[in-house]
Structures are given as C-alpha cells and as structure tokens.
Amino acid sequence: MSRIFNFSAGPATLPEAVLKQVQEDLLNWKGAGMGVMEMSHRDKEFMSIAQQAEKDLREVMGVPANYKVLFMQGGATAQFGIVPQNLLRGKTAADFVLTGDWGKKAIKEITKYGKGNVVATAEAEKFTHIPDVASWKLDPNAAYVHITTNETIHGVQFRDIPETNGVPLVADISSDFACRPMDLSKFGLVYGGAQKNIGPAGLTIVIVRDDLIGNVLPGTFGIHDYKQVADNESMLNTPATFSWYVCGLVFQWMKSEGGLAKIGERNERKAKALYDYIDSQDFYKNPVAKKDRSIMNVPFTLANPDVNDAEFLKGAKAAGLSGLKGHRAVGGMRASIYNAMPEAGVAALIDYMKEFARSKA
Ligand SMILES: *Cc1c(COP(=O)(O)O)cnc(C)c1O
Image (cartoon, rainbow, N blue to C red; front, side):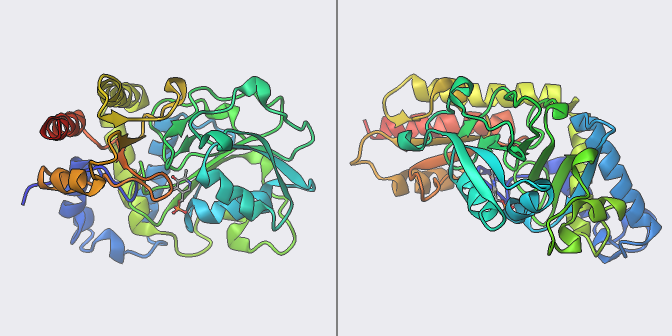
C-alpha cells in the first residue's frame, strides 16, 4: 500500500526520510547490535544520540546559550501545571492572553497554585482573531505572561512576538514548534509536545532561560523541577528514549531541508495556497481574521448546511487524504499542514476540494 497524505492534528505525519532511517536502524542501530528502543539511556550509544539531538535542536532553532533545553514527558498538558510550579517564583499570578481552548486548559491548571488573569481574549468572537496587543491589560507585577502561539483547534496563530516589558513571556508552542524562524531570546520559556511538528508522542520539549529556574513551589516533584531536570541532563529518570531519537532525526532532516528559513517559506506557501483557494470561492469558509490565520492548522466548514461533512470526509479518505475531521469544538474540517506535509499534499487536498465542490454544484 502506498502512503497517504495525513492531515491529522497530532500525532501527525513525519518526514518519509526519517521513517526510512528509523526502519533501517530498528533492529541494529549503527552496528550496536540492537535498536534504540532496547538501549539503556545510560549507555554511551544513547547518550550520543541524546546529545546530538540537543545540539541539532539548538542549531536549528537558534537556542541562545543561556537557555536550557529539557526533554520531559507528560505533554503540554503536564506543563500547564509544571510552568506555574516553577515560574511563579514567589508571585501569585500570571497574565494570560487567551486565544483558544488550549489556553483555557492552561489557565485551569494555574488556579491550583495561583491566579491566571485573562488580560485579553476574543472568546466572544469564538476565537477568530488575536486581540490587538494595544488592548492587552498587562500587569507589570505578573510572574509571567502566557500565550499559545498557535491555537491548534481554532487555527489562529501569533505572527509577531508581543513585547511584555520585562515580564517573562511564556508560550505553548506545541503546534507551531519550529515551523519558521523564531527569536527565542524574546521568551522566558517555551514548551510543546513533540507529536505535532517534531516527532512521535511521548516527548515534551521545554526551552527555558536559565535565570528563571531553581525556585519551585513547595511540594513540587523533583521530576517537575526544571533545575533538577537540567542538572541531570533530562535523565533524572528514564526519558522517552525512542521519541528523543526520532526527534533527533527530524532535527537533522530540518537541517538538510535548509533550516527553518526554508521550512518556514515552504509552510507559508502551503498555507497561502489553501487559504487563497478557500477565499476564492463560496463553497468552503474559514472564519479567522486573515492577519491571524495559522500556517499550521487550517479549519474550514462547508457553507451549505445541506452538504454533509461526513460525505466530504469519506471522499477525501478514498482520495488518499486522511485526518481532516475538524475538532469537535468547532466542527467542520481541519487540515493540519505541519512541516512534514509536502506541498504536493496540499495541492492534492485543494484538487479534491475543487472536485467535491463541483460534484455538489
Ligand atoms: C496538542 C496541544 C496540546 C496538548 O498536548 P499534549 O501533548 O496532548 O498534552 C496543548 N497545547 C497545544 C497548543 C496543542 O496543540
């Protein structure tokens, strides 16, 4: 069977070159006589894989030297609680710019330790745009300001990094991790699960400025204390070794693709092709303000209520296009077009959308 185009929001499609390398290494990694899944995380083979992955990630994303890269578990969901445990640092509240459902979940978790103040939101408009920075009511005494750079469900994404006047900026970057160049020095901390844009599920990557760590709330588990994780090179306990290795291959693939500048350009082209098509006709709609549209997740609905989503999805599947069902919170369809989705996949989707619209005319 040939591979299909997988538009799933996550876990999501991976570069074919990476999967082939995994296949080649599976039984016997570089003559070690065993696969990576079977290696001790303390062995020098795995240590070299882990260190190389971090080196490549630092290079690809331009991580400044005074930032730690932590390889954790529990997904972004665990970080919703771990971030306040580490970053409240004697303060009682953080500011949140709420741009969708993932941000809501993050706020829910901070309330166990402090207060999450919503300083701006477009919830009343169903999260179809990002509130203008000038309208944000930031508290200069907040422990940090939290944003979700890309709200996966609603398809809204920050294009510019907001200025927070010295208050550390924290971002959930799960669904736009390394999708284009990003100035990490503007952030105190970013975090995200690997399974959208970086690799398989199981690994959560945290990039944090080193002056922010080492002052956790009492009662915080050691495994959730960024300082302890950093001091132990993310090996306080057994890390997600296989995911870590596959992510390492993805970082190498990113380098071979010309780095984030080139990958970002390709992502912009993919998104533009899809939005241009959606905007050129009346059969499909996307509700998001043009300036805030995500280049990673493109939700769309069928304008005619008599035409059924299930029929669209069934035909898509038959055409080799999977994972297009929208999130239950917004309905309709969603095309996730992460780094590993080739331009040919987006072209095939647009062809199918045209064909389906024609068949219903
Ligand atoms: C998927 C996603 C999450 C949840 O990630 P888990 O790894 O399942 O915990 C959180 N935030 C954003 C923006 C996401 O896209």
